[in-house]
Image (tube, rainbow, N blue to C red; front, side, top):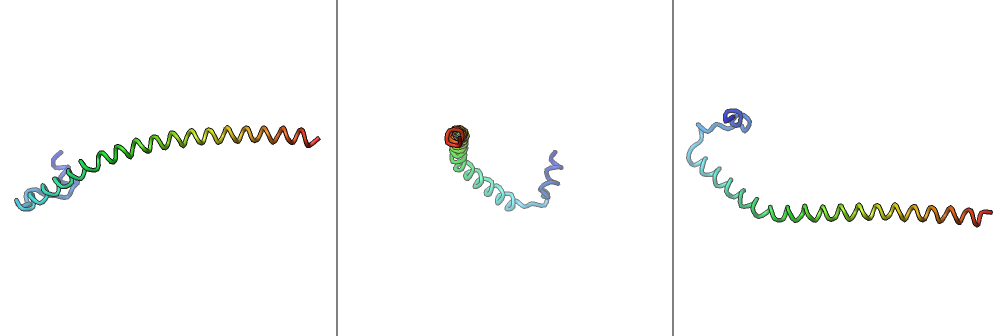
Amino acid sequence: MYDRLKEATMTDDSTMTNQDRDMLETQLAEFQVYIKKAEPFLKKLKEDLATYLSKKQNVMKSYGGASEVLGNYEDVNLAYYGD
């Protein structure tokens, strides 16, 4: 598995110097800090989107019901005033 990972990332740890390793560790640490800061925001965004989608679904159902009522109203009016 280690060899597959090296091949997939096109890296060879035997040619890396200590300075290269330290640089990569620093970048990884910075990225972990970024993830920790972004994670609460992403969770909140997920919750907000779920709320939005459920409300949107309810509105679409309401529009469907209103459309049906208006269609029935027009049919009754055509039958009443059409004769």
